[in-house]
Image (cartoon, rainbow, N blue to C red; front, side, top):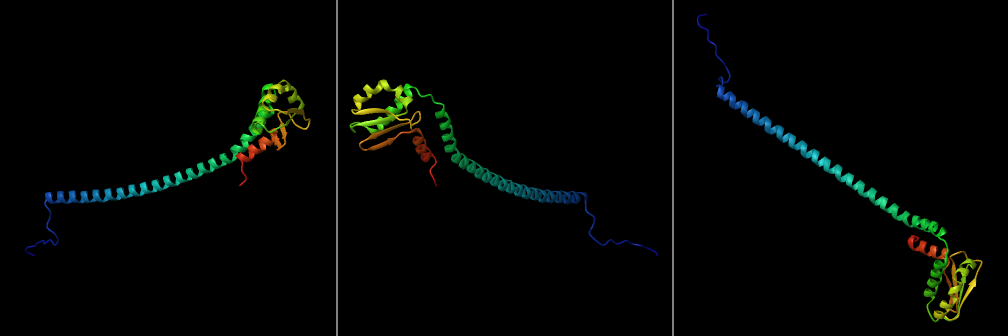
Length: 182
């Protein structure tokens, strides 16, 4: 063999500047692709977080609505229970009984003719001195003791009918107003 010659097949060797340019291009391409991939992942995570947040808020709204409904349903019952407990501890004195009598007479109104006002005997004893004052504005008023009534109860009988101002009756009316039957 006299001369051997090596022949390369393939691209010509690249100059260092060309290699640097290719590396920069590859780096930029990788950076761009990675940035796009990360941006897609961030957008997907945001969408998932928004979906979870909306679900959480819907759940909270439902829970709050349910709690409000339960409180609204329980409040009248609790109010009536508290009112009954408070009223059971109210001490009947002259002022309280006079207020009860004035309320029923105001409900009846003036000029209805004779009025028979029925009170528990202990309550009647407390307002005995008011007869004259009440008779001036309600001629024909007659205060009567009634053992069937409890303390704080009052009933009036006029020619037009009976006005029931018993405490239990008032509480029933209030309860019906607060807790209407659906």
